[in-house]
Image (cartoon, rainbow, N blue to C red):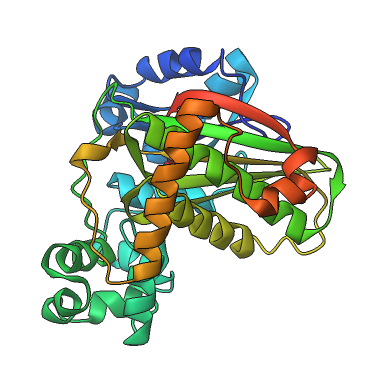
Length: 343
């Protein structure tokens, strides 16, 4: 579930611990995913409260609204993956319930794009689409061996299981994954997509440099766009591999921005959060035969050493130094926060 303020934005950070405490009165199995999300295993609470999943979701929503003035977007399903997917379809004040029977799960997943599955990033989605496997229903209908030949043994099996609605990820009480966030606000209603992309570039450059300085990599990105009418749009993307490479972060941020289809939207703020942080020395990097990628990483390492010696502004991209977005947006660092997946 994701908590939302009544104006559609994230709740006050000071209220989030209290909301977790409220969830703890319903079930002890609550996984905190700050700044505004939580996973809760309510199987034991259903019998205790004498309610079904929809009734329990209504109880949680009423308590959050009455006690803290916060609304909830709730997805309810048999496992975390389905719950997150259901929550993405839920609007403010709504609960999307996926029944546990296989037929309902199959119908829920059937026409969703391949990228909707956990672990299917842009590269894997393109590989699957090149074989005509562009929907979850078609992935589920494909033989396991075919998926393993396309994606590899482990990734192919995971895609096969998830396309059938199987997710073995447990809800771990109290577990949080650190994250980093940054934002850029505009002094006016920004209509220019180029200016918005320059702001995104500055965000990914900043987050990449901070991740590398801390010896961290991230597994996913979350983009939030706040418009002039105070509405907030959010997109999440799992990266093909854990990374702190700015070019990879930029590509993912651009793809999420394009997928929002903003066109002539009046944008006031862009926020980007790197989630699922882990030590860089434990991450696996797929070797590439692309000399340009290797060159970009060497240049990035040299730039990081220069910033460490002379300050964060010692090296910057020419696009950002010359472009207005590099100066117009106010840099707002949200600091170390925890993971915010939707469920």
